[in-house]
Image 1: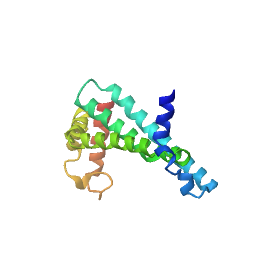
Image 2: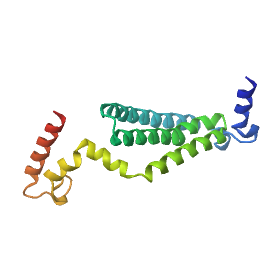
Image 3: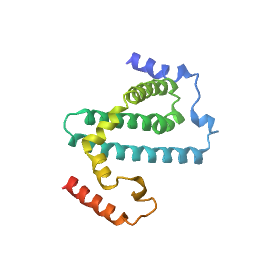
Length: 167
């Protein structure tokens, strides 16, 4: 019990660090607004990560599954470091804990970034790049770009291919 208490004292610098609420001049409205907005963003991150997790479980053990899992973990760490820690630091100045979390995020991010070919295997696994390439061989006919005379056939081709992939 004593070690937990000393650890809880170490994270905020033994009482030497300030809370973010102090930096915000204890402005109750701004603090409440910041907490609500940060937690709203965190809820969105959780929703997106849960969606990625469901898709990850659908894949067989493969490089694509590993890559999707890595992206999901990095995304969750971004949410924790970028948004969840702000309400925490408003009331408990755990700057050292924040730094440890950022170190894990930095390591995970660069580990993934330096093996960026993992992203390619996700698309290959999902077989989307070849499907899209077959329907829209040149970028000028892609939706959202200037329409061409064959825009309708490109849309029809894509719809058929996506129906085939999902069905």
